[in-house]
Length: 368
Image 1 (cartoon, rainbow, N blue to C red):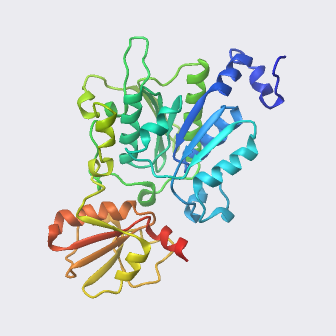
Image 2: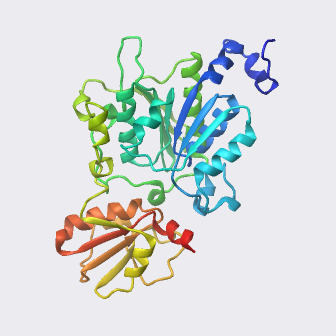
């Protein structure tokens, strides 16, 4: 057999797949955004299957709490960049393909350039700002988007921006036209997630990528699959296309690059200052200042400076009176502290100076 590679022998012998299917995988370029719970299984199986070019976007670092579900990493990797470690480990799994890591935060300023270079985009992120950003960029560039999401014991998978036999095409905004308020939806830090669940959902995403590239099977185009691990209930619904969402998406790339998705999702404000580690530590002991940890009570590590704990999960229900003029917020990675800042800003307005620690307590650990 011409260009036979024993690595893919089970693909060659697979009916309706064979050498032609494998060649399609080898020519493909897939960008995986997020190398966490969903991204790890997606990456491991796409790399093993022989996707010729893979990109990995993730600016996060590996923490101990990741290892319960992000099985691409080990205890020795704690504190290292996910994208960097993922590239090295995945290349040891399959050194015959090309893997590029981007240890950067995806934004409206760099998303178009990154996404344009790939054939299929896989959304493995865990926040609404990133999901809307990725979706809108894929719509503008007409790129297929394989979406996945997890929550506690349930997961979702869908394929967007692909025409069905009736020339219909949906995107993420057909599911959620506009972002929910920051305090309406918990992330896995607050709500928890069973460790095996992202493995299951991530493998479904990887399967949809392979089906898209090779033409086998029936892809989840214009449909949403929902899976419950507790009782193995699985159902697929048609995505409603009756509501027009075209006005919600930036009209062109220039408009897209000018859109602040964190602001759109209520996660940013010019009135909430973002502090570096050094600036944060300089201010924690200032007079008339309160330092607030918005993580859940059992999250580690604990900070070694004076602070009070006000978990974000209960903050929206009852924000306590705060006498101090300056409020410093921190969490694990900087995401929840920004949401908390928006809630406090809504209550106190400009009567308080509200700041949060960029990249959270993870950044403090790096300094040490």
